[in-house]
Length: 105
Image (cartoon, rainbow, N blue to C red; front, side):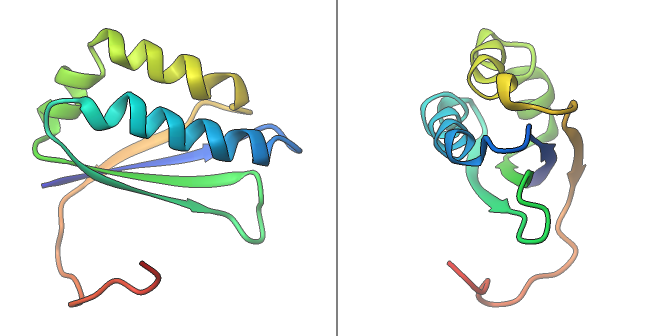
């Protein structure tokens, strides 16, 4: 399993609109992509315009080829892109270790 971690910075004062848009975008677009295994969105406390979007993919190719090179990616960006202050920083990770339960879910 691959974790895609997107560090997103949005325009100030648009948090409420973005909160709804990012959830809608993930649930109506990304969640239907091949290899999608789940997601988590965290909001900044000290930096309220900062979000961490974590999407779990079966393989790196499911994200980078299957999703990023599809029309669904343009649809996703159309939903969330208007809120971006800068381009999101996106990296991929593999699991090294985990606890039995993740706090806060």
